[in-house]
Image 1 (cartoon, rainbow over the protein chains, first blue to last red):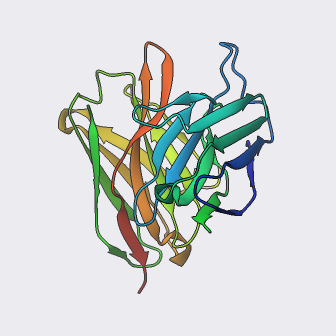
Image 2: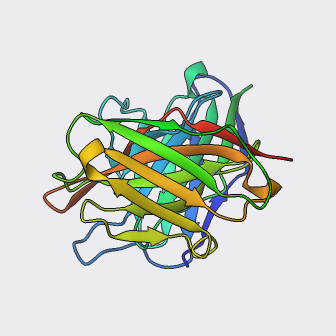
Amino acid sequence: DIVMTQSPLSLSVTPGEPASISCRSSQSLLHSNGYSYLDWYVQRPGQPPQLLIYLSSTRAPGVPDRFRGSGSGTDFTLQISRVEAGDVGIYYCMQARQTVAFGGGTKVDIK
Amino acid sequence: QQLVQESGPGLVRPSQTLSLTCTVSGDSISTTSNHFNWIRQAAGKGLEWIGRIYSDGKTHYNSSLTSRATISADMSKNQIFLKLTSVTAADTAVYYCTRSAVEYSSYFGMDVWGQGTTVIVSS
């Protein structure tokens, strides 16, 4: 089974400053079609998770361009260019290359 | 646009079988390429994928739950079911039904999530 590892566990960010979350998979998520099957989700307080990024770097509809996903193979990054108060929540990476597995989550809060 | 809603008993006795229903509104689950997942989250913990079902009825499961979990569907009612046998307190969680969007073999992420249904395992 593929194991997903996120870091850091938590992040406290000043509004307007950038944030970065890393995700590593125990096996390559790169498909023969050239895409890495890695998604990012955010779970805001009291809400179900919501899709942010799929296939490593494609933003879901309605997701602001402050959110940027990058990476290929086994190493991935989610960057928020300017954190806002509404970005508070837990961010999860998820691999969809072989069945499904989630990272442990990164909690983002505001300083 | 398909939407999903989970339902089921909020309380299950230990050693019994947990049974949940996901009702899908919108397009028929049998005529799209999308597939549907069950995911759970214990209080204060992360997300755990349980398994998924495709429009042809094919299923895949988390290797840690494969002996206890069964996912099935009633295509005529646009409903997806989860059965989890021999439950213990460790199965207490919020259970989510989600859609993985697939169109013309292209993947678009788990783009639809239900609000979740809370299941408590207790005597």
